[in-house]
Image (cartoon, rainbow, N blue to C red; front, top):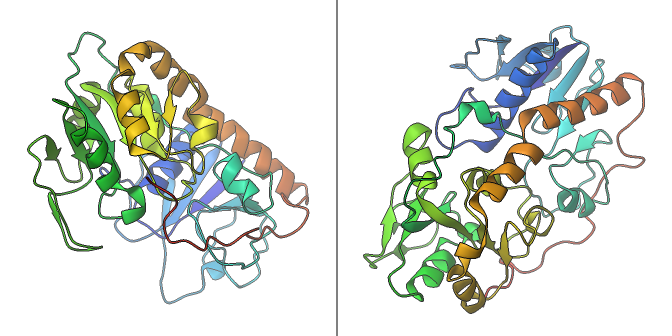
Length: 327
């Protein structure tokens, strides 16, 4: 099978870029399985296992699709008719009642359910790209992982949790001590350290030495690569019960609450979690092979002229409050 993966971005990425990493690992895994993969992406992209076609921003996307068996869009499909069988993965949230394409795939069960759908595929990672956990490394801090400037990620909440517990440190991966982009934030506590947008071995080292991820998001997280990356390195997750978290973070993998005091109490008990069990859970359940196999089922269905959803998915209920509850 020849699959064309389309996304309006540059591949590969090193630091921030969840969708880009997912489509990279998907393509790489499909090639391992004997399929041919091409990408239609932005200028500056390169790939050593598949052909790269560069998006011409002056031409309709539908007119730039090379001949393939199936097209996998990772942003909104073109308005023009697409003659090749296709699917559309919706990676982000939306708070409008626009009807989605009938061949839409979501990235978690909760994500799909909120749009009246049961069509979803969990994201997966090629763990061979990651350093293997070293269980002998001393763990001396907790971490926050995500774009800290984005207020729904609630780095303020993570800081509040850590500063309410004596002697613990929080390493913020994905933010800076002073933020003025999306609401003023200046963190004065010396127990909170900021590392900006980190990637590669530096990121792995910081996760490797962490006791756990503090992830008090205030929106319905569609999936959350930060969850599975942290679990892979043996870090339980202390987060809020929104979006995908209740289906991914079971009792052996962490604790969920929308109350800062309850997360602070749970933080003191992270020693009860098995680092190896967290690692094995992420490795076995959220890998790129499982993701690729699930997408192959979606590809086969549309190639057989069967839509992935009986009716166009549409948001079932708009979120009125800007931020979900956090106490």
